[in-house]
Length: 468
Image (cartoon, rainbow, N blue to C red; front, side, top):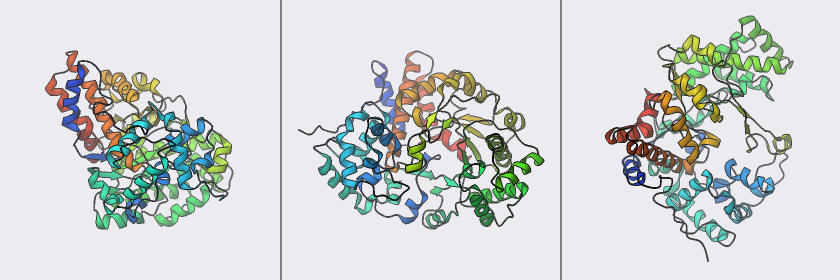
């Protein structure tokens, strides 16, 4: 018999005497608008505003949280629809969906399970859980829902109560999708400037990207100085399109500036294809410092999330391309790495640096003390492996004593999975409600203050961080 799908109304709230107060705190925030100011939903989704394709392509194939779990249990990537670089066809969508449903149990107690149950029950209206037996019926039910006019991407902005959503866009993106959306929904979908691809001189096709950058900026990029000017030009184009922030996914937080001569040397060598690992790292560190300099000039909030070894398995990368889930966190150092930036900009009005990490060991040792002393630094919400109930709790427990609440950025959902956005915000609001309720019961926080802080964490801090 199919298992009912019934997310519990008290899910992720604390057990015991704190629950009643946590319920009340959560009720005070659950209907606040969503500010989605660090995300990766494709801007083309809103520009085209077409019906979603099918359940597999929407909910399984692009979600590397889901695919990596199934792959870890021996499911072949081809069975999950990961697109191959050699063009060989992937499994059919219904077959992908069946594979996912038959392995639904693998997601027990994971954040993926939380988000998907929320999506299935509260967004798609499903009443039975995925399984091998229910896969086909669910596929047909979801497909029918996706075909309805009120389930188009733009309509869901209102359904989800999304006040503002940002996408993540390369420095070499022309922003045409944003122009199309802005004509119909001004100020609702905005870009975020991400220059990672041109910051790493060893990236495949780097010189082609530099040429493209120069064309878009109408700037000569044959010199290092011209390259920096082109980046300034592109940033202005993003600002004109509504951008409020930049995003930097570097391997290291090191942000040490190069001399003009050294920057020109590495840049010229890279254009000739002469790249070393040492020069690549030095240039990336220089780029972080240059981006901080430009943010101090133009006001774009600088977001940094270092510490991930991308494409850990070379064969997966070669066969299926980047960003297929084989990215693994590494230990990350911030205090010395960011000192050049903070010496220069740590007290500069108009500059703001939001720091994210997947290395929890630095929360109380480095990040909270940095945010607790530099007025330009705020701590970003738990990201990626840590955007889970326990990860969110640990974040509050480890940073609040030193950084307080108001040196954090508010919640950001950081996802490509559009339908999961309400679930992610709801989870964060529940965890914060529970954390605040416990502080009240321990007489460390007044109840009135707890309700005020809950609204700040859910909405006001994100607005202040990114939009003030």
